[in-house]
Length: 485
Image 1: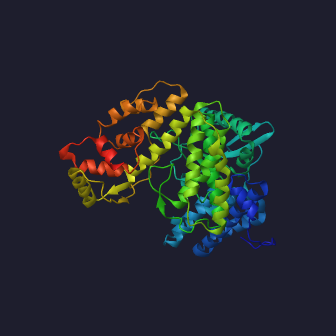
Image 2 (image 1 turned 135 degrees about the vertical axis):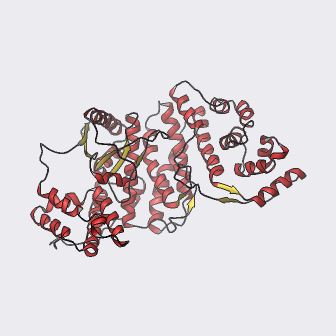
Image 3 (image 1 turned 135 degrees about the horizontal axis):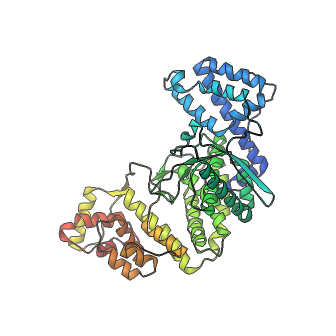
């Protein structure tokens, strides 16, 4: 690109702006600074690509910028350009030649800049207007770069599919404007494009963002307007946090693995922060639907999860202390808000159930400790000191739980069909649930169910390891669980 007369200035956020971001309540000026930081980052990546690749493609783009400066800046500021630039530079630095690294994309951009879209040809868009607040975003269902958001994209949408997406988008926008208007205003400012992706049969709906694509959301076709609204809020929060982290380090040890209430696999501290920040706004949305049992469940569950995750974050930088402190201050008052006792039981149980299943999946007891457990049981003595070791599962794991699925069906008033113990638990019959769970000691979910329905404390993975070491003795699994507890 050619030098410009614009005066470069560093990107800054005041303490007040950083606190408002941490609380999930940024103002327009703060979001404008993040948007400018996105373009600056893209330009820095572009400069490094130009220095490393040294091809004529960069010259073609520079010529296009001289002729169409605003159009080129618009193209360079788009989220999918950030995906391309980050991948291209990584490939060049690992030895790929410019052609294989994709540097030719710069010539494609130059050609696009010379033929800007007209009002008659705006491209695919999702747009909505409600109560004086409007939003319009690109629907990216053809750009090859859309696969860079981490989920397999759909083929280009048919006319019927596009109509469904537009209708769902408009309905979701009405909900957002009516329920959480300030968050809708943020969404309208940040969200740049939506990428439709293929659904995952094992999940109720999937969505994703990329740290390199501020303002882009990849999402499968939602089941209903509320799911669409929540997905957009959730992923936009990820984008905002990514943009903040372009400017500041918030964690001193971002890669330290630990428990996350939102995933079945261990997550780095940076992932836990991302989860807490995304679910902060999701929780605020569910909080505005007091007459809906499922919404009250989601509110009660996620307010506790966000608060616990935020309180558990350690080794924060000074900027991180301010950001996370504001997050904690936002969610704490919600913890005291009343929720129907039956719904609260299910919400607290869902959080505890997840923690129990997470431990059983990711914490392991070594052979020597298992043998010590078996010996202590046979001698009738107290539980010996045992250490559970974090051994992460080999792949990314979204939360899956038959008990949680049953809970959702119960709260929606749908017919219930499932395992005996799970049915008894969600209906509040803990005694029947315990009788059923103790019949299945080889089932990880049953061990979690025993601790859950029995109100037991302690480590379920130690109970499961002790029972396995004692399998020749055929002990009662519930007795072993109570011994460990």
